[in-house]
Amino acid sequence: MLSFLLSSPKGSSMSSFRKIPQADAFTHAARYHASRAMDHLPSILPASLVEMEGRIAIVQIEADSPVPIPRLRVPLLESEYIRAPLQPGCLGMVITAHLTLGMMTGLGIRRPTMGERPGNFSTCVFVPLSHAAWKRMNGQFLNLYGVEGVQLTPSLGHQNTVRLTHDDITLSTGSANVTLSGGTVSITGDLVINGQEYKAHTHSNGHNGAPTGGILS
Image (tube, rainbow, N blue to C red):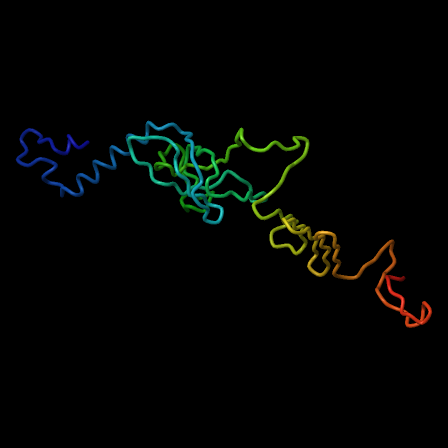
Protein backbone atom coordinates (compact mmCIF):
# COMPACT_ATOMS: atom_id res chain seq x y z
CA MET A 1 0.00 0.00 0.00
CA LEU A 2 2.78 2.39 0.89
CA SER A 3 4.62 1.59 -2.35
CA PHE A 4 1.41 2.39 -4.22
CA LEU A 5 1.17 5.72 -2.49
CA LEU A 6 4.78 6.53 -3.35
CA SER A 7 4.55 5.53 -7.02
CA SER A 8 3.72 8.00 -9.81
CA PRO A 9 1.29 6.81 -12.49
CA LYS A 10 2.23 7.46 -16.11
CA GLY A 11 1.15 10.85 -17.31
CA SER A 12 0.80 12.15 -13.77
CA SER A 13 2.79 15.19 -12.80
CA MET A 14 2.43 14.49 -9.07
CA SER A 15 2.51 11.18 -7.18
CA SER A 16 -0.41 10.04 -5.01
CA PHE A 17 1.90 10.38 -2.03
CA ARG A 18 2.51 14.05 -2.83
CA LYS A 19 -1.22 14.68 -3.23
CA ILE A 20 -2.04 13.18 0.21
CA PRO A 21 -0.66 14.86 3.35
CA GLN A 22 2.32 12.80 4.47
CA ALA A 23 1.06 12.25 8.02
CA ASP A 24 -2.26 10.92 6.71
CA ALA A 25 -0.51 8.75 4.14
CA PHE A 26 1.73 7.06 6.70
CA THR A 27 -1.17 6.60 9.13
CA HIS A 28 -3.28 5.02 6.40
CA ALA A 29 -0.39 2.77 5.34
CA ALA A 30 0.29 1.67 8.93
CA ARG A 31 -3.35 0.81 9.51
CA TYR A 32 -3.49 -1.11 6.24
CA HIS A 33 -0.45 -3.24 7.04
CA ALA A 34 -1.62 -3.80 10.63
CA SER A 35 -4.99 -4.94 9.30
CA ARG A 36 -3.31 -7.31 6.86
CA ALA A 37 -1.21 -8.75 9.69
CA MET A 38 -4.27 -9.19 11.91
CA ASP A 39 -6.01 -11.08 9.11
CA HIS A 40 -3.35 -13.79 9.39
CA LEU A 41 -3.71 -14.23 13.12
CA PRO A 42 -5.58 -17.33 14.30
CA SER A 43 -9.16 -16.88 15.50
CA ILE A 44 -8.37 -18.30 18.95
CA LEU A 45 -5.54 -16.76 20.97
CA PRO A 46 -4.15 -17.29 24.49
CA ALA A 47 -4.88 -14.36 26.78
CA SER A 48 -4.71 -13.25 30.40
CA LEU A 49 -7.07 -11.04 32.35
CA VAL A 50 -5.71 -7.59 33.22
CA GLU A 51 -8.74 -6.07 34.93
CA MET A 52 -12.53 -6.16 35.06
CA GLU A 53 -14.90 -3.31 34.20
CA GLY A 54 -18.17 -4.63 35.55
CA ARG A 55 -18.54 -7.85 33.60
CA ILE A 56 -16.40 -6.67 30.68
CA ALA A 57 -12.81 -7.89 30.65
CA ILE A 58 -9.61 -6.09 29.72
CA VAL A 59 -7.29 -8.80 28.42
CA GLN A 60 -3.75 -9.06 27.09
CA ILE A 61 -2.90 -11.44 24.26
CA GLU A 62 -0.22 -13.84 25.50
CA ALA A 63 1.66 -14.47 22.26
CA ASP A 64 4.62 -12.95 20.45
CA SER A 65 3.69 -10.95 17.37
CA PRO A 66 5.59 -8.72 14.92
CA VAL A 67 2.64 -6.35 15.18
CA PRO A 68 1.97 -4.81 18.62
CA ILE A 69 -1.42 -5.99 19.86
CA PRO A 70 -3.15 -3.60 22.27
CA ARG A 71 -5.11 -4.74 25.28
CA LEU A 72 -8.61 -5.75 24.33
CA ARG A 73 -11.91 -4.81 25.96
CA VAL A 74 -14.11 -7.86 25.45
CA PRO A 75 -17.13 -9.60 27.02
CA LEU A 76 -16.94 -12.86 28.94
CA LEU A 77 -18.42 -16.14 27.81
CA GLU A 78 -20.84 -16.44 30.74
CA SER A 79 -24.48 -16.32 31.74
CA GLU A 80 -26.10 -13.51 33.72
CA TYR A 81 -27.08 -16.05 36.36
CA ILE A 82 -23.60 -17.38 37.25
CA ARG A 83 -20.91 -14.72 37.62
CA ALA A 84 -17.47 -16.02 38.54
CA PRO A 85 -15.21 -13.71 40.59
CA LEU A 86 -12.50 -13.51 37.92
CA GLN A 87 -9.32 -11.79 39.09
CA PRO A 88 -6.38 -10.12 37.31
CA GLY A 89 -4.02 -12.82 36.16
CA CYS A 90 -6.72 -15.36 35.30
CA LEU A 91 -5.60 -17.32 32.25
CA GLY A 92 -7.75 -18.19 29.27
CA MET A 93 -8.23 -17.46 25.60
CA VAL A 94 -10.11 -15.15 23.29
CA ILE A 95 -12.32 -16.71 20.66
CA THR A 96 -13.97 -14.92 17.77
CA ALA A 97 -17.41 -14.96 16.20
CA HIS A 98 -18.16 -14.42 12.51
CA LEU A 99 -19.97 -11.15 13.16
CA THR A 100 -19.57 -8.33 15.66
CA LEU A 101 -21.16 -9.00 19.05
CA GLY A 102 -21.48 -5.42 20.26
CA MET A 103 -25.28 -5.33 20.22
CA MET A 104 -25.40 -8.55 22.27
CA THR A 105 -22.90 -7.41 24.88
CA GLY A 106 -23.66 -3.72 25.27
CA LEU A 107 -20.36 -2.68 23.66
CA GLY A 108 -22.15 -1.48 20.54
CA ILE A 109 -25.60 -0.68 19.20
CA ARG A 110 -25.39 -1.61 15.53
CA ARG A 111 -27.13 -4.76 14.32
CA PRO A 112 -24.67 -6.81 12.24
CA THR A 113 -25.35 -7.82 8.65
CA MET A 114 -24.73 -11.32 7.33
CA GLY A 115 -21.64 -11.49 5.16
CA GLU A 116 -20.05 -8.30 6.43
CA ARG A 117 -16.45 -8.18 7.57
CA PRO A 118 -16.26 -7.10 11.22
CA GLY A 119 -13.48 -4.92 12.61
CA ASN A 120 -10.37 -6.42 14.15
CA PHE A 121 -11.09 -8.07 17.51
CA SER A 122 -14.64 -6.67 17.63
CA THR A 123 -15.90 -10.26 17.70
CA CYS A 124 -13.68 -11.49 20.55
CA VAL A 125 -14.90 -13.12 23.76
CA PHE A 126 -12.71 -14.08 26.74
CA VAL A 127 -13.00 -17.66 28.02
CA PRO A 128 -11.20 -18.74 31.26
CA LEU A 129 -9.34 -22.04 31.13
CA SER A 130 -8.59 -24.66 33.78
CA HIS A 131 -5.01 -25.33 34.85
CA ALA A 132 -3.18 -28.56 35.63
CA ALA A 133 -1.72 -27.04 38.81
CA TRP A 134 -5.11 -26.37 40.43
CA LYS A 135 -5.82 -28.18 43.69
CA ARG A 136 -7.97 -31.26 43.14
CA MET A 137 -11.49 -31.32 44.54
CA ASN A 138 -14.28 -33.90 44.77
CA GLY A 139 -15.37 -34.42 41.19
CA GLN A 140 -18.78 -35.70 42.31
CA PHE A 141 -19.75 -32.31 43.77
CA LEU A 142 -20.47 -28.91 42.32
CA ASN A 143 -17.58 -27.01 43.89
CA LEU A 144 -18.10 -23.29 44.41
CA TYR A 145 -15.79 -20.81 46.09
CA GLY A 146 -14.84 -17.20 45.67
CA VAL A 147 -12.14 -14.77 46.72
CA GLU A 148 -14.10 -13.50 49.74
CA GLY A 149 -16.99 -15.99 49.77
CA VAL A 150 -20.08 -17.26 47.99
CA GLN A 151 -23.56 -15.77 47.89
CA LEU A 152 -26.73 -17.42 46.59
CA THR A 153 -29.92 -15.49 45.85
CA PRO A 154 -33.13 -16.57 44.07
CA SER A 155 -33.14 -13.52 41.78
CA LEU A 156 -31.15 -10.35 41.28
CA GLY A 157 -31.66 -7.98 44.20
CA HIS A 158 -33.86 -10.39 46.18
CA GLN A 159 -33.64 -10.13 49.98
CA ASN A 160 -33.37 -13.90 50.52
CA THR A 161 -29.72 -14.93 50.53
CA VAL A 162 -27.34 -17.62 51.67
CA ARG A 163 -23.97 -16.02 52.34
CA LEU A 164 -20.80 -18.00 53.04
CA THR A 165 -17.62 -16.16 54.03
CA HIS A 166 -14.36 -17.07 55.75
CA ASP A 167 -15.85 -16.08 59.12
CA ASP A 168 -19.49 -17.15 59.08
CA ILE A 169 -22.51 -18.56 57.26
CA THR A 170 -25.69 -16.50 57.16
CA LEU A 171 -29.17 -17.45 55.99
CA SER A 172 -31.27 -14.34 55.59
CA THR A 173 -34.81 -13.46 54.50
CA GLY A 174 -34.32 -9.79 55.25
CA SER A 175 -36.33 -9.80 58.50
CA ALA A 176 -35.10 -13.16 59.82
CA ASN A 177 -31.48 -14.27 59.98
CA VAL A 178 -29.57 -17.32 61.16
CA THR A 179 -25.82 -16.86 61.48
CA LEU A 180 -23.27 -19.54 62.33
CA SER A 181 -19.95 -18.11 63.46
CA GLY A 182 -17.38 -20.22 65.30
CA GLY A 183 -19.33 -22.03 68.01
CA THR A 184 -22.17 -19.52 68.13
CA VAL A 185 -25.58 -19.74 66.44
CA SER A 186 -27.34 -16.38 66.31
CA ILE A 187 -31.01 -16.14 65.38
CA THR A 188 -32.82 -12.90 64.60
CA GLY A 189 -36.61 -13.13 64.30
CA ASP A 190 -39.41 -15.19 65.82
CA LEU A 191 -38.36 -18.73 66.72
CA VAL A 192 -40.87 -21.53 66.00
CA ILE A 193 -40.02 -25.19 66.71
CA ASN A 194 -42.43 -27.97 65.70
CA GLY A 195 -45.12 -25.38 65.17
CA GLN A 196 -44.70 -23.93 68.65
CA GLU A 197 -43.53 -20.38 69.18
CA TYR A 198 -40.73 -20.15 71.70
CA LYS A 199 -39.66 -17.06 73.60
CA ALA A 200 -37.00 -16.46 76.24
CA HIS A 201 -38.36 -15.41 79.63
CA THR A 202 -37.70 -16.00 83.32
CA HIS A 203 -39.73 -16.91 86.43
CA SER A 204 -38.97 -14.81 89.49
CA ASN A 205 -39.36 -17.65 92.07
CA GLY A 206 -39.04 -20.88 90.20
CA HIS A 207 -36.01 -22.44 91.90
CA ASN A 208 -35.63 -21.77 95.63
CA GLY A 209 -36.30 -18.12 95.08
CA ALA A 210 -33.77 -17.83 92.24
CA PRO A 211 -34.91 -16.85 88.75
CA THR A 212 -35.00 -19.58 86.16
CA GLY A 213 -34.03 -19.08 82.54
CA GLY A 214 -34.07 -20.85 79.26
CA ILE A 215 -36.59 -21.12 76.47
CA LEU A 216 -40.08 -22.28 77.42
CA SER A 217 -43.23 -22.69 75.38
